[in-house]
Length: 244
Image 1 (spheres, rainbow, N blue to C red):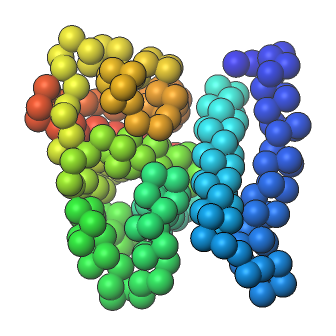
Image 2 (image 1 turned 180 degrees about the vertical axis):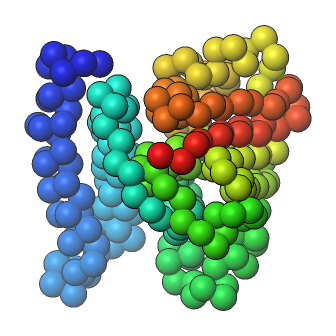
Image 3 (image 1 turned 180 degrees about the horizontal axis):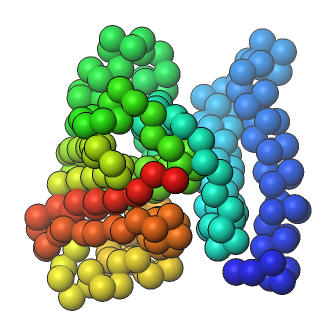
């Protein structure tokens, strides 16, 4: 994608606004049932389905915009706590992949947040310098990378997902799942756009776009991404990002 690509301009300028209006309208209908309701169970389910799919469309649009910005070298250096970005990315991914867990987390206080995650097979581990000190880079890009890796693991896991953030100079992100894994012969293609390792009948929701976005952005950030997996052994994606 380049600045001359009319499709990019269309996505950025002509779709962002309408999607935001749709989401705002649906959210208003769901949160103001005293004025618009009462709704039947079918009506509530229909509104929630519209909300989820509008969120998916908005997320995909934001992915494309961020890839475009990365190609233009548009990175904003700022200091932020990685724990905060991890929490936000978890909500982003769960809102789309498993909204029930997201809703449960939104009601949980700080003390019970980890308990809710653990009860749903999700564990987080932070170690190294950035547990106490801020990391310096573009927080939107880090959040996007985390969101994509988390979404991917949630889609393909059987029962568990483990997130690890560490590092004393570079930030190291690892996301592990216990899914069916990726056969060795397919691992060279996993970061290609719209490639999917599953058969059509087994494919979870998604376009196979997220991992290609992650690889593209990470490389533009002068970092790297690696994969450890095998058929029947789950997958672990590891990203290393130097500070900006």
